[in-house]
Length: 66
Image 1: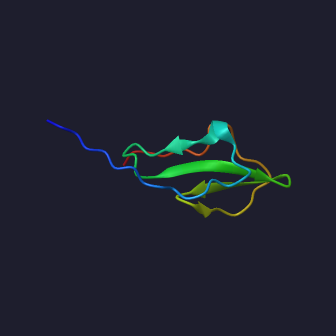
Image 2: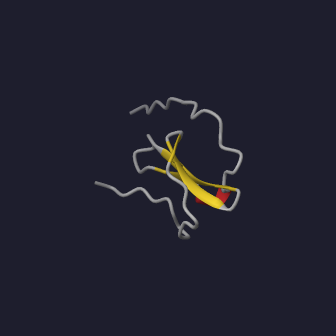
């Protein structure tokens, strides 16, 4: 059986990207990472930013299997 892969652009990475936080969903369809800017943190999921937080726990973000 031959497996095909498709490369998809996720757009521009936020300049405050925290490398250690990169997470890819188990089905490889979604991506998330933490950004840090001006002492605040947010999570980018599929190019959309969450609200800002004062801190985000180590090991976050995390995708869960359903």
